[in-house]
Length: 472
Image (cartoon, rainbow, N blue to C red; front, side):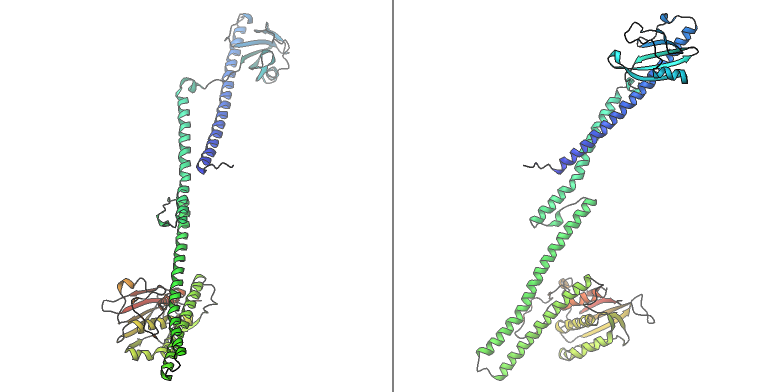
């Protein structure tokens, strides 16, 4: 069975290994420093003793009568490396011919020399040897080598307390850093738990750092996916509902015609006309849904203009074509229409989308203004446009002074299948809006890199303000 170790403890283990490695490296460094310090100190001591010996011998004091530090021994040699006197000559380690020793060779050639070596005759103990040539004789001093503490350590034991405190501080810092590094894991654990349990991801908190930024992006992505999922579900339900109404009506009309063999021709024609109207509404709904789907794809990939080709769009002609199609409805609703768009106002854009944009706005007024009102379309050129240069931006004000829009519906009117008068009922055979018109308006504006807003003036009615940019 594989043992699972928590990431926190694994990370702490790695830090401890690193800390131990640093401690060992520091120990080795201190050992070498102390060894170098000891060599330098003892060598200097031996130099002093050599000079002391030479001074005494120069004064006529016999070598056997000279007493040095108990730990320091000395040997007198001639220039051939032969021992003249050795303070340890009674020991078994005494060697009469020392001409092959490094310190002697160095003394003869350089004037002085020192070396550190073990003594085979003295249990492999290390000795520091120092030899210096004085005229026709060589004085060699030597001492057992041992590592010495530097003076500041020798005198002040607080040094060890400081080292201990630093070590404890490093351990505490390691634990603190480990906890900081694994803290984002807690947030990610909460995030995954919230995702599994379909909880509110916006309640998961993240630190203000790189890990937190990544966590927030992941959470936002899942929130957007969940919203998209709910939106698609709602959209599917709305489409199903919108399709169900005309299909049910068509089925009812046709079923009545089939079952009633004695239905008068006039009544039969009326039912067929109603079926046709519902079929037309069904076709329009499918076309609008298709247009919106294509718009979503085109907006997401502006470089791909195969779905909505770009060409010169003449606004006056576009409005004229719309009036030719539905202008007769103005008289039926007692609606006055005013448009100040000149015949030469053009931009590069999609003719079909701009046509749908204005047609849906006009249809919206015809359906919901209540009649007995006035529709006005006005324009201004954007800051980067002028009368003498190609139009880069055109700003429009579309308004009617009809019933207006309820305040609580202002922020929702561009949603798909939303109707401000959602409580209204449809009479059999009545062809009504699908709730997609203003969604197409907004997406058409977005496709042309513009923005749209809606306001309800105090005097009543509604105003749509939007701008359209010329596309390349």
